Image 1 (cartoon, rainbow, N blue to C red):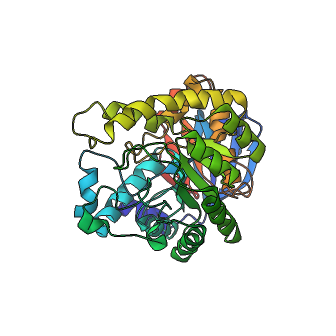
Image 2 (tube, rainbow, N blue to C red):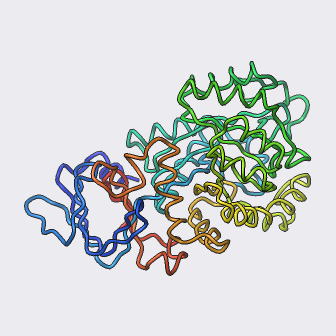
Image 3 (cartoon, rainbow, N blue to C red):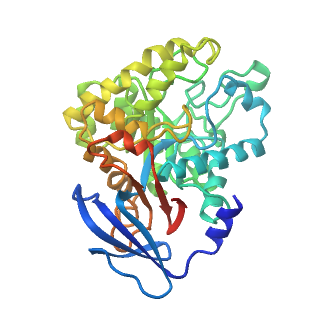
Length: 419
């Protein structure tokens, strides 16, 4: 960590040249050969053909034998947590400081895995402080866009008191992220704004890992969803909707959400509606596979969770395949935190296995997230004026997509974190 603080606080004032043997033009979906990236501070100054020779006080990074790409974006992570057999007890045992220390570890692991930007879709609010600490250079980690606390209905997937005894359960409201009317939905969005969130996350249906029986029933009315999305728009937020069941998913799309997370039991009608509304599917195939595996480990999940994990987990990849083939907009997202942080890149392999072209998978984690985050002129491409977020591997990912699980080089904001 001390090396990080030194390198980050003393950001190089000199120019950095990167000689890239193969450079990805993410927008065109093409590889350029023998290119030079010229970086000033935390931004790319120019991209030039050929290996340009630096002069003076200039850093030179030789990636001539590498495939060089923009840093990846994972649009569904939970930076505060990582599921384990004790996770359901830890929320009653761990102090906020314990969660914060863990989140710092998970953030660094994520960055070193090649993900220079993430969208955090729900925690205790410590995710907001983590974002700020990273932005100030206090700790290493990806650029974070966070929803802060998720919004649920009473007993819904993100009700923070699910699984508690009657004494601890209480009656949480909009401030805690629990709403039961359009009016409370508006209030909850305003609390997220007050607390410093960047976007809004709702749980439109039941979920797999919540201590509640149903994993897919609709949990908001269309009026409640519309009140949330309309208020979110007033504050410059987009809305992500966790959804497994089709009815809750359809209401979320009709109600104006920008992304559907998981989409497990999505019908063709809902797929067509997503195409019409330009609503993106965030597949989280890795999470589906991981929870199905963990459900077979005795005691890993509470008994009420196990049948949901066994049923829902194996469905997600097949739904993704059908949605992709039908033309539903896709953006990369894994649900890291449900499984171990740092394994995010496994999602690329599962997407390709289900029929997506490798280049499209790369674009789903670069240029597409940038559009949703309103950062299309700042991240997701290696172009002049963009942040110097650069990753590299030793093989062509189009020929071996699994190589993305072995990132050799990571630069974020012009600072090298892995080489």
